[in-house]
Length: 240
Length: 111
Image (cartoon, rainbow over all chains, first blue to last red):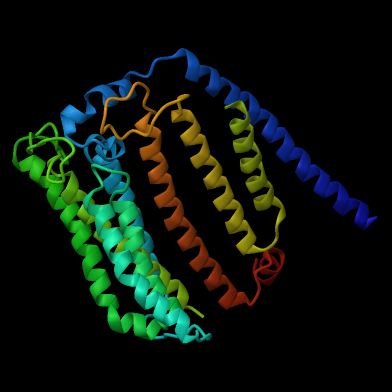
């Protein structure tokens, strides 16, 4: 009898999910139809005028760091909050090793890869506005350096190379630098985080030093994301 | 194009099913992550245009896909990563306190 009850419960849950899927089918059918009939004025404006207004040929970067930079500030605060919560919840003093030791082949290969990762991350950050990439992706690649050091060697070695206080300092520099770059727009008589409106030298579109503040904001975001993800990973590894 | 929307629905409902049926907390975190990835796929689909190129205008292109959903998808990825990290550290804390990850046993132990 209890078995029958369990089977019924499972069938009930599956039925709920299938009903929900049926509802979503109608919702997405409407979204799909909306797609074909309406013209999107905002995205048409971004595509036709975005390069002249911001100087960045990567339109995703121009949306992220110019038109909607305030959203990006909130998004970056999210990572800062997560890293802070994790560093707060996990005791700093207690560091346990990962347990397994790798052969020297793995260690030498990681040693070989690390400089290339650093170059790739820096390239992705600095060329974020003229090619695919940007601060978030480059920051993730930079944080992989600390994560690889932690996995192949140990938490102690990784924290000996890059100390936790240094990582926190770099993250704070990223966070404060972003806000200061945003205030630059206020000082020049425009809005907070203004770039194209405030005429910060959009330059020739397609060059590295163009697009006003966007490369600098990319650098700040890259520092912040890289340090933040390294702090998050090391905090999760340390807990045992 | 339509089949991709069906894929979004299947992924979303798989995630919801995982959340409401599984007892293990780690599996519930997996479910939340699956729901997030289905929403990212939905954002990509909303911005997609047939035969469109990526929104990087180094030349003159005829059709360019919508850049706004891609920026929002980046936001989703970042926030999803942060939320997953916080959820995982909460799971670790719960396991250290109760020595189990089964939500039924955790409910029996307290309240």
